[in-house]
Length: 199
Image 1 (cartoon, rainbow, N blue to C red):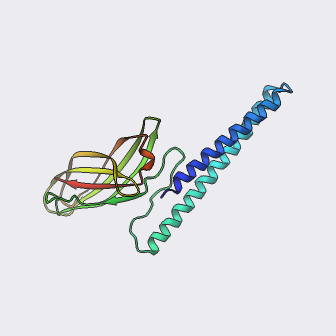
Image 2 (cartoon, one colour):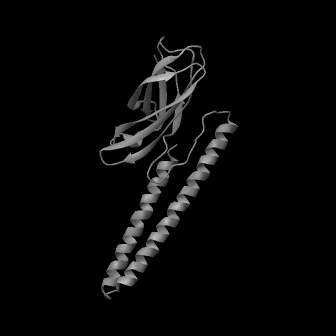
Image 3 (cartoon, rainbow, N blue to C red):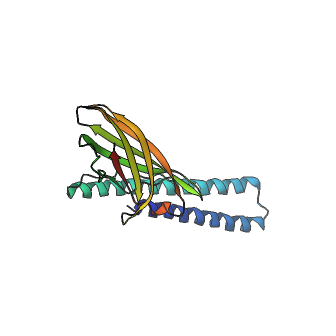
């Protein structure tokens, strides 16, 4: 699940290399007093190369997601990656629906899925959005609270978020969503997401 992070790091290395190359070109050209057109042409070439690198990384990432899903299915695992990472965000590894450990867990509730991704990031926090799908297989309406936990690779909770007042009618499947602002110092360590529901 760390492959998307590796791909993003590779993209950053390519970007830095392109900037260094552009810097070297601009110094070499400054001795010859280049024209604006020639500098603009070089910049456009660099941007075109960067776009090709980004597309190549996206294609590689899509292929990796397909391979992980095939291996998961061949091993009989039901959890698969549902989307590939984009350049700005990153997928949050495994999605782990779980039941709350207390006796107040409604037995008529089934968690179908929980998923999350980074939708915005800066030096202070990362905005990690989540989506939870819950079904009421019982005969009465239930009001729930959902607890979403962002976990590291060892299963330790790095941050969490709550959604209150989720009303699920009998036979109904609802989707709840939200986000947490995770401190930038721990956000890169988020490897998976889990969900618990209780009354």
